[in-house]
Image (cartoon, rainbow, N blue to C red; front, side):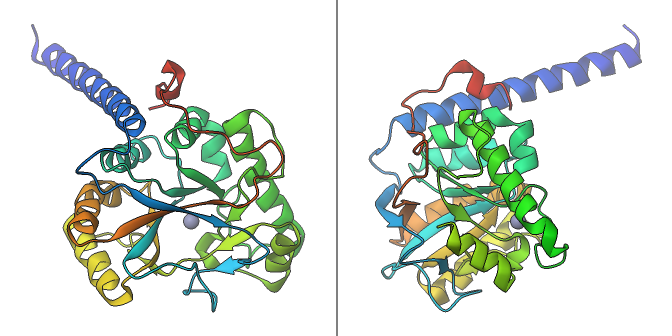
Length: 284
Ligand SMILES: [Zn+2]
């Protein structure tokens, strides 16, 4: 065998190995999510209903009010997915600890990876919306803001339940870069959509090692003691850090709260399934 052929075969083997590893991780995550609650895991301590009438805008980084969380309660949120290389790793870490989170999806990748969107929902997580292309709603012409919001919602809903509606099943929205305008805030409030800011973040848009990110977010949490936490599931450093962060929460008596809509939109909220169909894994 020539050297080149050997290298090519080795590369092919590595690709096949990586693909089967990710497929088996997806299966394990699904099996673990179905097997919750499970002893010895962090778990989800309670479910909190959020509605636009009483909480139109939440998150202390942007607004004066936030969720009514008790000391040592956190809500985990992940923005900018779905992203096939890393979202499955995040899902696996959450399933391993029986924790439910909220994912604010960008419409375009949602339309490109619908199986992954359905898998996030099937594993019991909440799906919120984060525009179509992640353009700043502060910087684009006001005439384009509605289109950017609605196209994102419709893409997420199409991926989730095959209906391209602009009425979200879960009326939760987060502005790209938290860049709001009075007109778009007004628009979302008039449509009964809760605007999620955040209380603290891991600054994971900055490049750092998983270890540095873990220290940063746990140091911030020690000061805040509770709150909505923002991560980005497309970030490899965050996906790599998450298992250690969840262990930290478990070992330090934090409790995870799962946020859900108080009143589901038209079509209802898709119910988590106990097992995943084969097609749910095909997008990994
Ligand atoms: Zn974002």
